[in-house]
Amino acid sequence: MNNDLFIDLGNSRLKWTTGVDGGMGAVAYDRRHLGVTLDREWAGMAVPDRVWLASVAAADLQHALAEWLHSTWGLEPLSLSVQSVACGVSCGYREPRQLGVDRWMAIIAGYHHSPGGVCVVDCGTATTLDMVDGHGRHLGGFILPGMEMMRDSLLRGTALKVAAEDDDVREWGTSTASCIDLGIRKSVVSLVEHSVERMQAAGVCDPGVVLSGGAAFLLHPYLKLAHEYREALVLEGMKRFVQELKH
Image 1 (tube, rainbow, N blue to C red):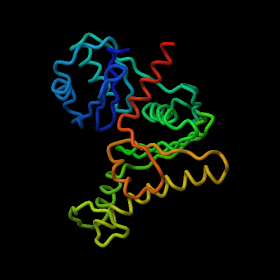
Image 2 (spheres, rainbow, N blue to C red):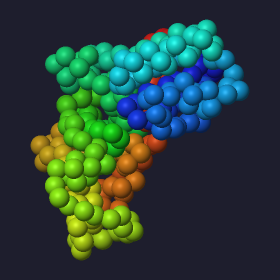
Image 3 (spheres, helix red, strand yellow):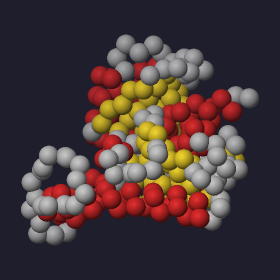
Image 4 (cartoon, rainbow, N blue to C red):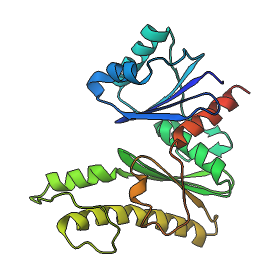
């Protein structure tokens, strides 16, 4: 697996890593020019032995990636999918294939970091939250718009005109822009804290909190619970999943 390439293809960002201890690369991409982005970002990369893919992107983008891999390296991506049980975690969805594979990989990695129970929060184009108990049972979770999407949707649907402001930490909004931004961030924080409190109150477990995703930094000043940020959580889960596949 030392020379394998792992790809997390999201709706707006591409992330990848190589080898067991490889660092992570990440880039925002224009869906019309994915091949140009790959030419630039992966120029000079050694041809991998295998390419593993976890993707929630549209079919045309997956096809464009597969075409690039085939024409450049003569390789076909090995797409990962959700199983009912993997790496000590059982999927809480009635239909496991309906769960996004990126969420599944993040859940697997999050549970590894907090095996006594975990709340996995991924802040990307969408914000997702998943709860796993101390026995590896995925209990389910929530999906809501990403924080940027919430803000854009509010501004499009109203006559509000706001200018960007300094992103300082405060308790209450004192302008329209800060009221919007704080309302969005604290709504996500409240959902995380409520979910953890529910697990604790029901005696299920005392879950750790693992954050990931490009917008997770927006939550740090407001989330009072102890938490860990893992930038490459989906890729970590992919590696564990593939290791299990090979055994």
